[in-house]
Amino acid sequence: MAEPYDVIVVGSGAGGGMSAYHLTKSGLKVLMLEAGRDYDPVAETPMYNIPAEAPLRGASTPDKPFGFYDATVDGGWEVPNEPYTVAEGSEPFIWWRPRMLGGRTNHWGRISLRFGPLDFKPKSRDGLGHDWPITYDDLAPWYDRTERLIGVTGAAPPRGLTNTPGLAARLPAGEPAAPGLRDLLCPRLRGHGHPGRADARRGADRRRRGDGGPQHLCLRHPPAAAAARSGRTSSRPPC
Image (tube, rainbow, N blue to C red):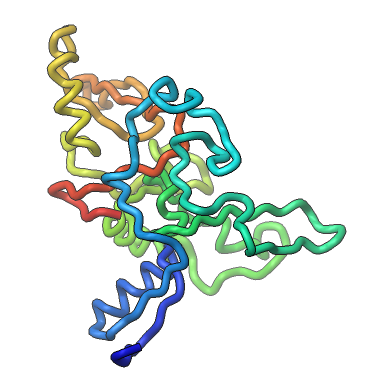
């Protein structure tokens, strides 16, 4: 190295990426080492394409186990020259590993589930393991901050489940997650008598607001194991 660094971070995934972010924000000089290549989800992710538009209709191949839209680069359940072992008699274990900038954060689909209240107190609940010295309520504000920072959510849409905290960090009301989708679909929706407000939240259905307001058309993502594009909007940075 031609110049000294305060910290060297190995890996650019969730752990390495957040470590480098906080260290550099604190004024330290950081060198990040990543085994994979650069990856630009905005340019390389055909998020709204359908299987019919892909080679082999998007079918699985040895280098793309989840089909053509699989966003993994140089990875998968097995990585060449990087084997791992599983202890004899143990439960089956497989480990998905990509080799790309951002690591497995490229496959979260904008959702990263939180630990729930019960996850922090396993000993108290069933007598196994150890209780954490903090509770979910202690950590919830930090979940909120992190979700807003990197553009992901907890359970979405919220399901009201005891141990699956719902989405807290939303985009501002009326702002779709994908402006390009809005520009494409809204004129067509208006032509069919719909107010033409598109919401690209994943896994959402058609529903009416609880206050009796207008109905929104919520669109499901195509059945593709692709990373979610994360280009800059007016309200959140790229992932």
